[in-house]
Length: 175
Image (cartoon, rainbow, N blue to C red; front, side, top):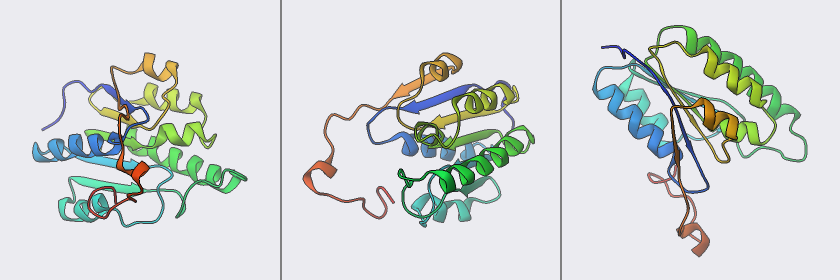
């Protein structure tokens, strides 16, 4: 099965659930026989739960993790920027390869926010999207130009989060 028409979706906002929503969409696509590439920017380390399930769903579901373990070094982004630029070049190659029906760029907006990837590069990625590929971008603070370029934008809005009560990321829920 292949998509007749792909669109550009953005999941943004300060609330929890952007990656989770993209994973849910990916699972639905795999269930219908579509091939998914879930490309994670600035998410080194792990393994995350989604990586563990992706191994069981191959070859329909592929996760590519980029970035170094830990969080972005905001005092010196040079290494993080180098890794993100390499990752973006790889993502562009895969996006246009025709191999995938659904292509998720998880935390690409975060990489943009930290200055690891330029906004123009993300807009170029959108322009490169083949017509029959669904492209999903996730991360906080979507720039208005990205919102304008997208077909669907969903904002996750935090109302209450257990993290503020001291609950750390939990295996199987956030990890």
